[in-house]
Length: 149
Ligand SMILES: [Zn+2]
Image 1: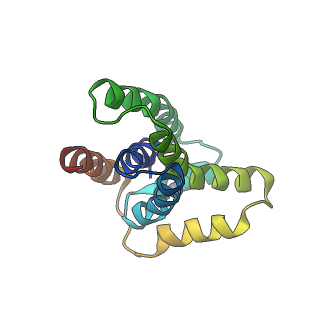
Image 2 (image 1 turned 90 degrees about the vertical axis):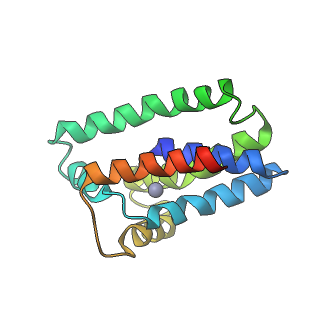
């Protein structure tokens, strides 16, 4: 799932709990729960395995990396989230699993169990959906969470 979704939900979890540690733990867990929802990442993974010959997928990742801080700043400005330690730890917990996966992919040895578990969450429900629908699913998730937090 997009980093922007994990970061936003981590921030919102942080906004709604009292302790940074709780924000971190709940957000970390939320990452795997969110990844259970079919969201079309198979196309991204396939592009990654093919050294990003499909440039659109690479641009999507860049887009995600650029929009994540923009989205968070917007949430701060609109008052949806406040700048606090718990929000910060929520964001860190929300994105950490993907960072651990990246470290595993680069090193080919660290965080093997996290990597396996992360893959398992993506494959738990066998029905995969095209990425374009996956993006719509993720936009709906962000919308609903922001609307009803
Ligand atoms: Zn993930």
